Length: 635
Image (cartoon, rainbow, N blue to C red; front, side, top):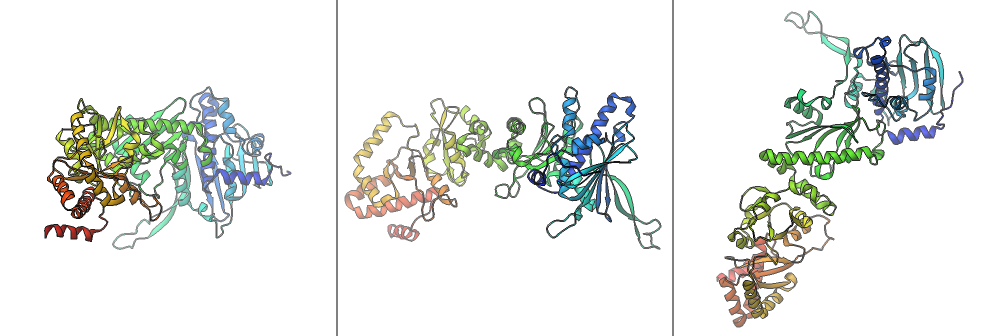
């Protein structure tokens, strides 16, 4: 019979389709097995309404056969088979899908779950094959047909013989080269790996004869040394029933834990399991896990987020990043949807409406489960937050605070009064009636923050302070601006909302009376400070540093410590203010020195400024000069 041209004519089209849709050559096996599963589905569905079929579910299977000598791999099924006309329509036209047509014809009926709906999966065979032969016999027909092709140059269809209904796809594998290894697809162990990876949950058994080794009978005793013999065994390669499609009532914690450890290579059971099934605008099953510990590379560039994505039980992507926002990137797991096409590229997925719907629902589900854990199992939530709270705070800060409403109720910070992690909701619920702001303080550790001079007055008045110890914390709160209509306010801010009008007037009066003293001290310190003034926030401590403007001292430290955050050789600096306690003896000493010994006052200004830097955890510019100044005072 004369060779026919593909209706989608050129080799270029076939090459483009293969190269743009498939990333890895090994995908071909997944595609052909999925097609075989669809062929069985069609006959099985017919058997439910047609008693003459005479087959039940247990009679169906898919078989792989390897012939190393002739370099062939055969994928066989005992499904519906194809006539010459169907071979012409389905295999003669690239992107023509018989499975899709079957599903459309039966849209009103339930339990139709056809995998191959995109119509190009079969052509992935040419990625590994120099010649493809398809021998198919339709169910109920005595005739079989042979379809053959070397690729885009065309195909032939001739009459053939076949013992029973179904389809055999025979791949003549290409010769291996230095760049490509095609021999691996003739190794049974490799085929077993690929089935396990991509097609483990195909609903029909995938079988293959595999070589095994066993102890030869009569050997391995004291008299006879152990001898082994090879034998072949018919092995079912897939497990067939996905755990995520089972009812929760059928599963135990150990079932989930074992699956998680095996599937995601974790030695520890997950902290939380989220098993959900959704129908409607987007139908899918999801099985998600929150790890008990932070992966070693989680906060590195090497970490790759994403969920495994299945289409009707067939793996189509190992790491689908589009299913998870960055702030929930710690979640591991998988999603299985029958609404997604099997043959779909990463680029196509980015624009898939169903995928976006699923991602949106998963985001809400994860938040709901975390809030439930926070409410009902505080200890477990705090363990989770210790590992992944930083990611939530980055999520609030990123994209200009676009996700702050979603994440704010999941945040926790250490409380000065409770001496443990608390939520913002808990803080606000305990606020004093006249309290204007949610107060916070920043530092390396909670112990260091607790000793800061700026916290002294607030604590004396019984106000709760949130202690921020992570670099991102203050950036996160600045981006949020407020919570429950209460503004965040740093203990180092100029206005703490504490001063009574009379107290304010007194401080302003004293600042005005001593403005020449403070101007002298500011000039002595140069551009290192923008102002020197009296403070009402200090009680027993003599001095502290605060900042005017939007950039705090803690933010200054963080930005200057980040590689590439500022141009080389440059540093950002907050508008530092040296604040002095008017009730401390040091203020009287400074006033006296201004009148009696201005030069010594300059040394005092340097000394006090350096002390304030040390309190803030900032480096002293000239440690030698500082120690000499201390020694001079001691002499």
